[in-house]
Length: 138
Image 1 (cartoon, rainbow, N blue to C red):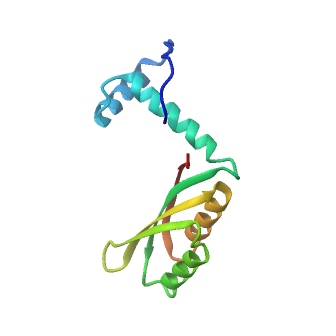
Image 2 (image 1 turned 135 degrees about the vertical axis):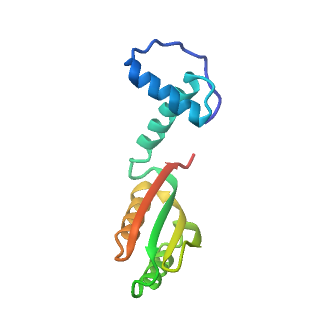
Image 3 (image 1 turned 90 degrees about the vertical axis):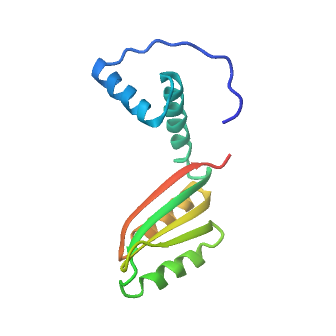
């Protein structure tokens, strides 16, 4: 995220039970102190906020799980990906079991366009689950 400026110290009042749960989560995630965990949460919220601006350049991953036996689904997904080849940078295809596939697409472009492509792919009949994760492209 770039170089950090001077550190500012703040005081925060938090419910004890909430703080205990936060500390347990931080321990499981490997944080050695609360400050770094708070900084990461703040960075994440700020990045997510920037990705909602329609003209903002973003990169992201779209994860799809689908049944490849659904009639013509694989062909429809491939055709849609070809239609958006400038935004879809890369794909990874994994056979989960006899019926199910997982596909991860890396997308890059304007936020509104990337979201529209992801929505169209997720809404395709036969896709069982889809999730788009975005971050800023700079």
